[in-house]
Length: 87
Image (cartoon, rainbow, N blue to C red; front, top):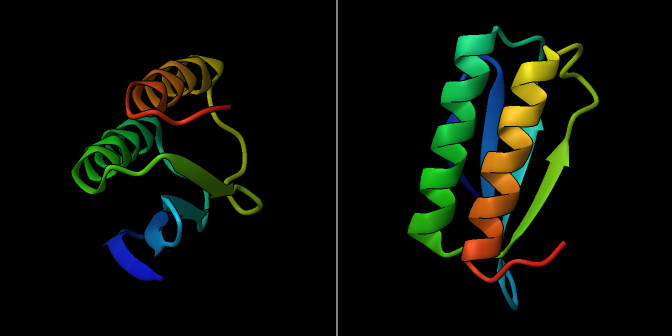
């Protein structure tokens, strides 16, 4: 496991197995702007490393705005799908 990104809210790790897997480890509540910036960074790293799978540890994330959840879902699922990932 390699740590690719770290902030007060989130760590993003890369697992190099039979396929590249991104792991998100949320650490605390994250403001909307920082959440969106973190998700954009996730997708940048996902494209860079050609990851096809995603694991998210959301236990410490706490509440998010519905608009942020919807936006991130579309961003992540479309982005992973374009890279060959499957749900």
